[in-house]
Length: 311
Ligand code: PMP
Image 1 (cartoon, rainbow, N blue to C red):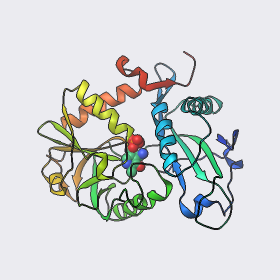
Image 2: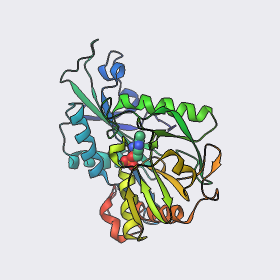
Image 3: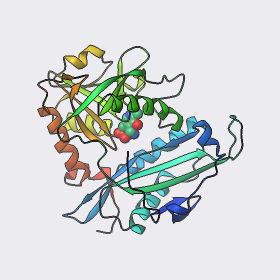
Image 4: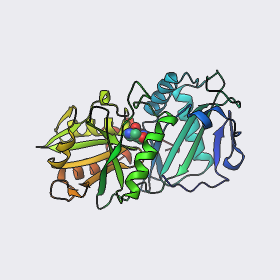
């Protein structure tokens, strides 16, 4: 993701609000060498008609973050509610009136050489104005990666562990240099897992199908939003089951989901058209519902949102 980083942006680091340019770590920091950190990605959407910035499901993101920090035995000394408050305060201090991407990062901060982690932990939260992540308006071209998705018994894929993103970086680099927009990774069994930075859904006969978390995919929050919207608003059957690689070539529609990409229609996979090669009706329906929900235009989903500014 290429986001502008203004050095004067106010960030939260080591328990204080400060300028991004002042928030530095030393080069011997444990996480920098060994990947011993856990991060999050949270989005806020600007609603211009209401002059309001809506943060999407921050409590779920911070609950996931704290749970996943537990896998790495990294302590975050604040509650999801306190972390949400800091996030809203960052938006207010930076007077943000645009779409925003929030990046919380907790990490092993000891400055010394040696893999064995100790109990020195730190965390930061940065809220950045959000540029477009993937140019998905006309649909994306995905490539099946030669890299396999990491296995739960090596590095858990369900969590956003820093070191795990070596796998995503290798796959993204391969995909981009082969002319694709995004990679699709297979897991160790050869089943479809997910994109390098997003979950994957396919549509077959008006059924929405996505791999179960046991197939080594991230426990995506956008994935969960889509499952709810599809079931409740579109009355679709939503099935979590393993997906064969060849099903990608016979499905009617496919799309990625993620905090950064939102709903990213996939119109070609390995140069083959998905369905008729255009963005399909189920994907369009989900895109519209998701956009309405995250901008606060659907009353039934207002409990997903936390407004940054007084109403
Ligand atoms: N899979 C991977 C590997 C990711 O990095 C992301 C982005 N967090 C996702 C899926 C989507 O998860 P979410 O919808 O919670 O952003």
